[in-house]
Length: 290
Ligand code: NDP
Image (cartoon, rainbow, N blue to C red; front, side, top):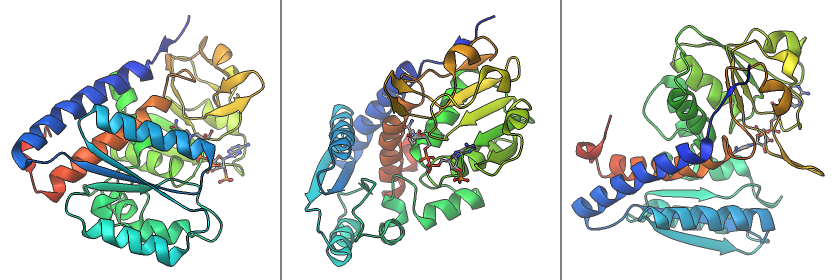
């Protein structure tokens, strides 16, 4: 039997359409569009592409998007000043600093400097604390997108055994909290985990966020499991996930492909977070769908 393929491109298009509707309603009420600012330090080509994509998609949803590109030798003090100005700018609802940043800059200092209400990546201590406490806040985009894919696929989460492979701040940890919040029994696995194949085989929901091409094999997967592959690995044979898709698709109940699975959801949820941030900042609950 072959697994149902979860179409992340279609899901992301649906999220963007919802955001565009919300942006139009927000703009009609407030006389301005939600504003998103992307800061890039240096001219790393991959960062350039990500930033351009984020700005383009924000504009396509009707948002006001601004890109700030700073020289590679920008100091922490200079960056702090720019972040402070944006924190104080009422027309800016969300901002992000494209990672990675050059060595003289500190990612933790940056994450802490951005006001939590404008931290639409959700990486800062304020939003991580809110997530841990189960309070409303900006949830990191990739794990938020994964939850949407699971819901769209109709995966029953309450009481399910979930295994998240990877414990990074941007994917693994917040993913585990979101699954826990939905009443999964969650195990977080990492590079020191013993018998990872055996652990993965216990999962009703398996989320792979490792960064190792096709590490998770078909015989690590329980028949009928929901398999979400966050991995994006560039190999000589093209883009590969963390899951050996050709094997896994024969065993899983549903599975995300790479590309076309989780990837497109990340920017879609950045836009959704920006709209939500704009609504929260203006205390505009009337537009909340729930
Ligand atoms: P990190 O490198 O920050 O974290 C990787 C995690 O995998 C670590 O917790 C590490 O464990 C664990 N790990 C590494 N090797 C093994 C192993 N052999 N067995 C078990 N666990 C292992 O990566 P990210 O979380 O940032 O990203 C993970 C993947 O997701 C990457 O391919 C990345 O490109 C992709 N990604 C995709 C996004 C999207 O939009 N779809 C967004 C973000 C990331 P330990 O902590 O012990 O070192």
